[in-house]
Image 1 (cartoon, rainbow, N blue to C red):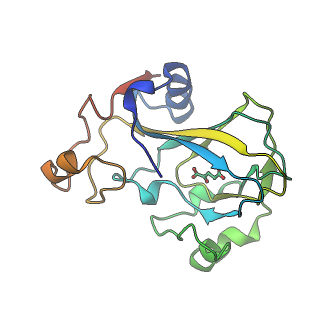
Image 2 (tube, rainbow, N blue to C red):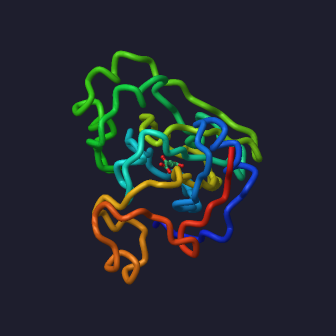
Length: 189
Ligand SMILES: O=C(O)CCC(=O)C(=O)O
């Protein structure tokens, strides 16, 4: 479940995201807990931004390990450079782990990189970077959280995703997503 809790934004990480993407200002788009239960399934390869209510080649996700994340309990893996190959076509996060590579066979030419983390570590990835997570083969939950940062000035693409229904229904495709109570500015370069 994706949840919008804009006021819990972490300004320091948003500032880092702005600096990484060389964007003058950045809004929070979503945050959510990511709990992989004991013996939980893998997370299929996917891109983040095509699920969202705006399209941008400069959106950034942060993933924060709240417990150690290891290859055994389902740390993230990434395909380096895949954001340069991505369009906005995406695969579902379902049982077909490799569905994304049927859409983008060229991404499968690069070896993925697993990124184990200690609790408190984080990674940033472009919203068009191919990533997934392994199964949790352990007896304990793997607990993480993520937030998505949207460059200021992005426009609504017609997809509701996590937008509250009343706000979604007030929008027309092409409107700027600049409602500060929903997507506050949380970082400046
Ligand atoms: O934490 C996970 O298992 C996967 C998270 C992920 O891929 C995402 O939030 O886009």
